[in-house]
Image (cartoon, rainbow, N blue to C red; front, side):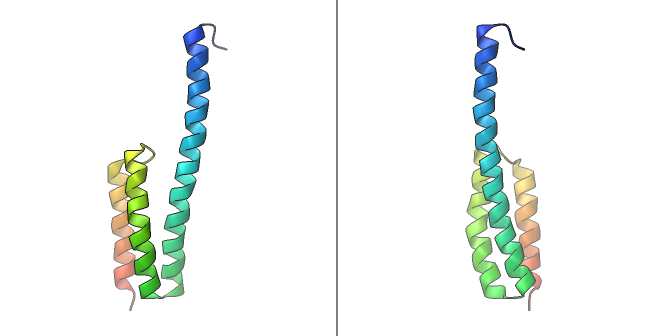
Length: 87
């Protein structure tokens, strides 16, 4: 357990930030799942619209520090490739 006042404050701050990051990450996963569900259904138009909605959300995760920019770029690229493959 922390003894210094600043260390105790840091623990409280980290706990708040952890909750915020968790909710942001869950939000990202939801948008990605919507794209994957559209891909699984085989409907290209709905998959494209879901991807267009998911892309800015994933990049927002980068600016908020939840995802690394290369990870976000990789996820978007792979989803885009899967959507493009749909007939």
